[in-house]
Length: 173
Image (cartoon, rainbow, N blue to C red; front, side, top):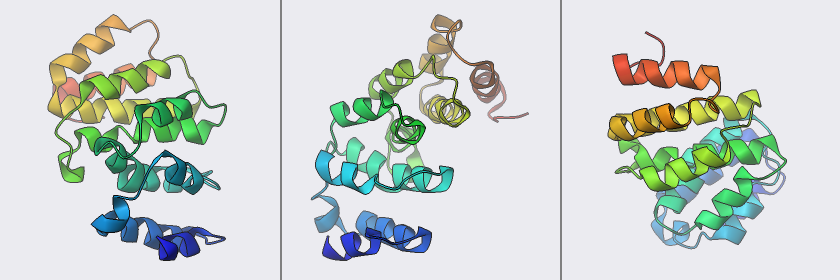
C-alpha cells in the first residue's frame, strides 16, 4: 500500500494509472481497501478519465467484493461534487461487467441509479446511461422495467441510449 500511496501523493495522471493498476492486480494489498482508504484516494479526482478509471479498476471491484460499503457509495451519490456522483454510478459497472468479474447485481445498481435519477449534470447523466446499459447486458428485463417505472424522471439521453441497447444491443444503432 505504501507504493500506491506514494504514487498517488502529488502524482499526476501516469502515476495514478500505475497506482490503480498495481492495486487492482495485487490481491493482498487490494484486500486492505475499505471506505476510508478509497475515500482518501478520491482526493484530486476532477475529470472524466480519472474518475472512470478509478471507478472500474478499484472502487467498483472493491465494492463488489464488499470491501467498500453501500453507505460509502451512496454518500458519493448524494455529494454536491459532480465527480463523486459520477463515481458512485461508475462503481456499479464492475458489478455487472463480465470483463470486470461481475455477475450482475441489479439491487445495488438500481439503488444508486435511483439516487441520481433527477441529476441533470452531463457527467452524471452519461454515467447513469452507462450503468444501466451495463446492467442491461445481464438483466435486460429488469432494466426495461426500471425505465418504464421511472420514465418521467430519467433524462432523455439515458432513455434513448438504454432503449437502443435493449432493442439493438448498441448504444447508438
